[in-house]
Image 1 (cartoon, rainbow, N blue to C red):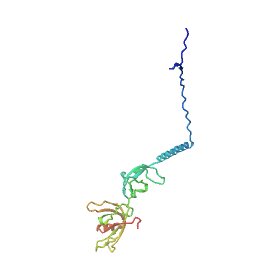
Image 2: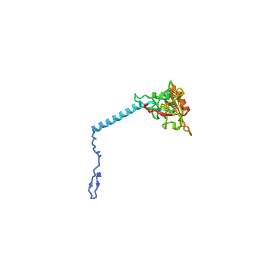
Image 3: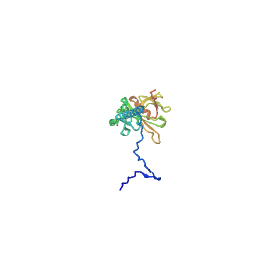
Image 4: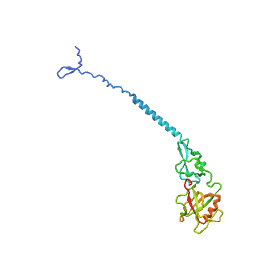
Length: 238
């Protein structure tokens, strides 16, 4: 018996055999390498360096901030400071700026404001004092002034004023010795230490005025007769 040979092809419709090629592995498309641009790389490195420097400066600024005492509400000259008048803040201070450190806040509480203090400002050591506004050799004269006897401008401690003697018609002026004087327009220099709010109904304002010791009695005599007017001096004293 003869052996039959295996056919490797498939019969065609016309009786002829045909063979199909076997598909092999497909090679991936060739991708060209991306060209590096030295200019772009240098710019990127420069931006990274600049960003790092900015962060470093910011960290240095944050690290050098100093806790200081601030003013949180208005304080008039001569007013005693309380804890409610003060607050704390952390700021970057210039070496030329002198401010009270937050750790020294208790040392300024109870002292008087040497100048008018505004909310939001830093408190410096020169702005407070432990001394009274009534200096040695001065006397404090309380003066009750009716609305027409006091300027419309708010009186604040530290303002320089003149007490003007305005005697009633036909009344004699009182001199330094307490005796009648012919001077119809005598004046006494003084300084406001404290001024009250206008009293409800009457509008009377009580002003504590510091005068020299020799003028205190005369000023009090003028006040007793209601023959005094209060005049504000110019800021430069002229």
